[in-house]
Length: 69
Image (cartoon, rainbow, N blue to C red; front, side):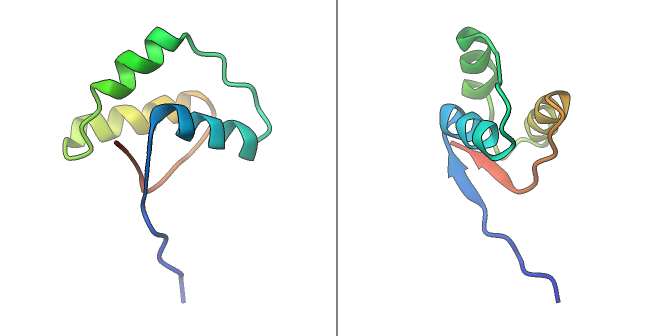
C-alpha cells in the first residue's frame, strides 16, 4: 500500500534551499530569474505547473506534488 504524500506550500527560496540540501548540490541561478519564474507561477494553471516541473527537471531533479505560494 502506497503512502500518499502531503503537499507542501513553499516559497521559491525555501524550495530551492531544500532541494539543494537534500541532493547536496549547488543551485546557481540568478536571483532575478528565480523571482521572475516563481512570482508568475499560478498553482491552479496547468501550463505553469508543467513549466515549473520542467524547470526542476532541467536541474536534473524530479519533484512531485510541490506547490509554491
